[in-house]
Amino acid sequence: NAGVTQTPKFQVLKTGQSMTLQCAQDMNHEYMSWYRQDPGMGLRLIHYSVGAGITDQGEVPNGYNVSRSTTEDFPLRLLSAAPSQTSVYFCASGQSGELFFGEGSRLTVL
Amino acid sequence: KQEVTQIPAALSVPEGENLVLNCSFTDSAIYNLQWFRQDPGKGLTSLLLIQSSQREQTSGRLNASLDKSSGRSTLYIAASQPGDSATYLCAVRRKTSYDKVIFGPGTSLSVIP
Image (cartoon, rainbow over all chains, first blue to last red; front, side, top):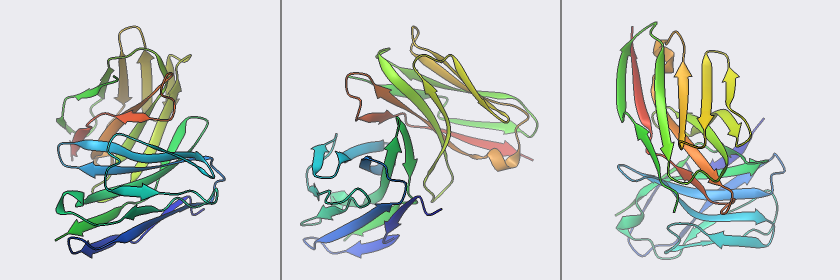
């Protein structure tokens, strides 16, 4: 069972570059979300989606863009990367109130 | 606003001990509470999910309890093993903001052989 799959696992960007973190799930979950995890700050919600075509902002949405064209995929876009976006990013999907996480994507912005 | 805290931030115990991890939340109007473990450099693994109508959940050596009125949940680990060493996080889903799950900062557990 693949569960929640995130790519890439590691990425280094220069300030101002753009990139997309991919997230796919094969559990037919309607709910998907993106978190970032930083030392001393814990896990913070960036954006979430309750179904295809529906997205909403979480706690720290600035600098990030999302879309949900299919149930399976929920990509996170950084339009102009900044050093403050250096973090570990986690994608999660959910059913009946229970969350399942991917392995994470470690992003460094120089 | 829901705030979630976990005490202690770090815990070191000898192998075989029973231990309790604590999770506190400020808004008792929750939908559910979920406990996770996170190994270094890895994602979060779901351990137990407690619905608001439940008092506890058990899985193997793990038992989680929920007391909404006091805003507390505890994770009890029996007969701890070195393989239990990890960071344990609790996450709360509020009834009024169902889609926004709030995480505690975690407790880093080290079980010494």
